[in-house]
Length: 389
Image (cartoon, rainbow, N blue to C red):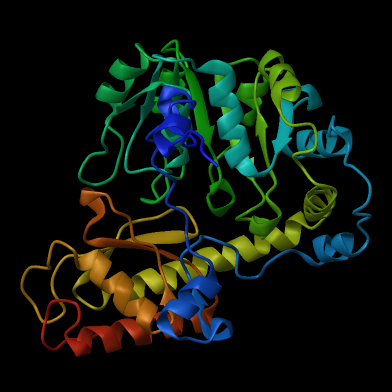
């Protein structure tokens, strides 16, 4: 039976919006089981320091709340209880708060509501990849203002570009470099004419004051927060944001009605009841971060950059046996540690070629990391011959 050939992949591709025809995927971390299968390792024995997750997991109150969830009922599309509790937590009005399936959903929502094709979105790389990823999908022009050699922001260049932009996206503390944005610079950006999307995902590990109150008071500012790090709920996908009430009202109309599941809502509400414990855990993670950084610095060939978050960006400044490090020292260390069952994060960016990002974990996980680094350094896999801590 004759007939014409069906549509080709190119025919289907032409149906897509132009911005999506060659979109690059976001580089997310692999699952533990994928990594274990690739290297022939036991997934239960992997040391997972690649996702900036909270190793202590959900609080006791959140675990109890999850056990009482009724999964056959839809959640409240207006997020009334959750928005009221989050507003009380932030010290703002509920009408200025929106929750989402992780702060990732809120980044996407804000950009889709504010940015159009050809609008300029300013970022300061290296930084969290979702800002550029979402901006590219709406056809925005992504303008990069690279960070200075010490990973700090370039205030003059950033302000100059902000004055010609629709939106500026910054993380403070920044992922993956760990530093915080100066408050004076953030306040200057609020006067630039652009909307400032300020990601405070790691603020609970600092002594900084949130800018949520300024956002709710009507400043051209959206402040993002999450339960993934401090709250130990990364797998539940629940984030929230404070913003001017008119923008929040729009997001509540545009968002998917049930994006925050009943389980995520229950866990988030219960976590707010366990704030004292979660703050205590955050302090413990900061202490372990500092212990890890000090031990890495003792190697003599690894340099941990200062961090205000629950991770450290670590740079190979030499080969383990001395001499200059190879240009791909970060990738070599990343692979060598994975072969030994220790997972850290490596980025494809040329500026981060000699770096890995390592999350703070429990004391035993730090010890396993340090032992694996010693073993890898002594093996010659990292570009030297002999070496160690």
